[in-house]
Amino acid sequence: MAQGTTGTTSGTTTTTASTATVDDQPPAAEPPRRPALSPSRASDFKQCPLLYRFRAVDRLPEVPTREQVRGTLVHSVLERLFSLPQAERVPGRAKELLRPVWTELSSGRPEWTDLFPGDDPGELHGWLESAERLVDAYFQLEDPRRLDPEACELHVETELGSGVLLRGYIDRLDVAPTGEIRVVDYKTGAAPRQIGEAKAMFQMKFYAVVLWRLRGVVPKQLKLMYLTDGQALAYTPDEAELVRFERTLEAIWQAILRAGRTGDFRPSPSKLCDWCSHQSRCPSFGGTPPEYPGWPEPDPGDESILDRAD
Image (cartoon, rainbow, N blue to C red; front, side):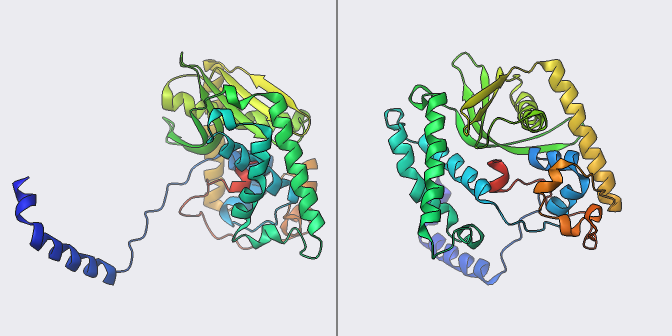
């Protein structure tokens, strides 16, 4: 206390000089984050190791679809909805958020606005109306005025005992006064068939493992809300199941590291190839992948904003 009082005048001068010195120096580079496994990238590797490479290692750009961008928009609107006072969480208020949130999200993303040609404003209007219908469908599944989530779009990260770093974003985390945890994920598509449901549940179990390791509590419920057809799927995991799933994640990460050392990310053709943006580079379709750039730094585990709305 005495030291701070004595140095009031000279301290100001010192601060100014120090600032000038710092400004003359190049900004310090942020230390690279450790490579991590996210649910989207883990799912990519399970589906097709070469797809994982294109997305996480080569980081090849992908042109988004209107459906993907609409999913991101609806997720963002629902996130903003829960930042409002509970009494204001009504359908009309949620739909009022759509256009300003779209303006905010699309700012600086020409690949998004290019999806709607400027000479036909009706296309954007119709697309926003389809997003409105998804928002309306959400209110048929639950009443947000009766909910008090602990967090929305929650970033979670934990390291398993084996050293595997897990990282992801949870759409919504509900915690009851008695401590039970519910993980909620919004899906803007229809309730899937077997392959799609397995992929969605893989994501939810990933989050369950992370929360279990972070908080020491197995989530009471994993809830998927499909807005296109107004269906909700709920699942209750148990600790033994999460132990097995944790081992699955560790095995996936070890397989990724082996492929990363050699560059041997092989294609795995399936029906899902019909939706892949990289067929022209895939050997299964007569293409040639770009030269392998080596294992990436800082981080091949990040999820994009589109991934989080998948």
